[in-house]
Image 1: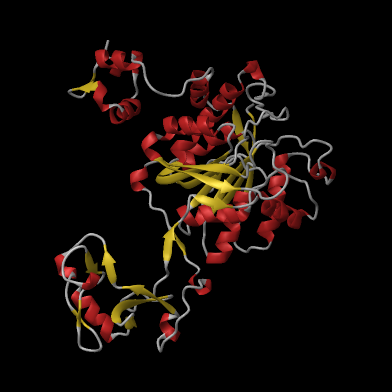
Image 2 (image 1 turned 60 degrees about the vertical axis):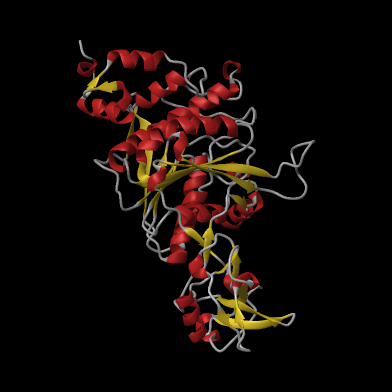
Length: 462
């Protein structure tokens, strides 16, 4: 009996595209398959891994309320409910449509309060103590959800995952498996606090991480960060082109790098003498510009001669707002993987929204999320956060749209986990984290026109 008879046509296609080495003349080779399945492989293994993968494939055990034939794809969506079930519900309408996923999952710090209720499989799981396998249980929890999240990404989509030292190494290996080691982009380091209050007696730990993966790295294009040239002190010189080009600084035309004979030509100095890069013809120096470009630079005011120690040197004017051809230019650099977004900023934002402190522990700042959005998204992209938390991702999307006229949309999922009675948010009348998260989104949305929101709930199936 051929193995093809046990697979659906779509499953067979996926198997053939992902594991072409298992096929001979277009047919699944049983011997190669057996060798592949029994071979020792490098990878991350942990108790519960198979069960987690199986759970990601099990049929839905819930329904969406209010009932809809399809989710609206042109609105912002908030879903209160268990996120693995919510991710399954989203597959039909959003598979291959999400440009960016950001999640800030539980960090598995060993806190006895780390409980994630799963109403459709068991009453609760305490991932800090279950069977003594803290890492294994946390990884099982994450593995199932990451497997469900990947199909939602566009081919050029990316996922950002906040994490700290407690599980960073394991999460990196887990993501290598789910998204592919070749699709790893960066392990961003975020400075999250300064000064007192460090939680280590040996070294001041002031950072955590953001792992970045692509669905298909070859198709990803990141935006670049605009430089704040208006406040850059190196632009301090002025000329007659100030109004259209801005201020400028001088950059040496002489360049010591890869040698090219076409860039090694004589330049006539103001006193009529001939000059060569490096002081003489030949390696290793050349001019940065070709002869033709240099002559254009002379004609258009981009070249400056200055006498240094009795000899002339040639400089290029590097303007704030114009390139070397006189075209308007926004100067940019790649976004940095070393960042500084303090937790205190997120706390301050929540306090300003609700008028009280202590509603949520360690909320991320909208500044951080906006940076990730600007880095990876265009103005009409869809962003998903299935650990909605305090609602920072939704707030950041709304805020970024207001700043640049974008029409980005978000999908936010948050478990309606009970807030403890001694928490200020509970005393203020918010019973669950989903209630608190949704209220923040609603308050921010009120001050931003055009941000339509549809709210759903994941409930037990009949």
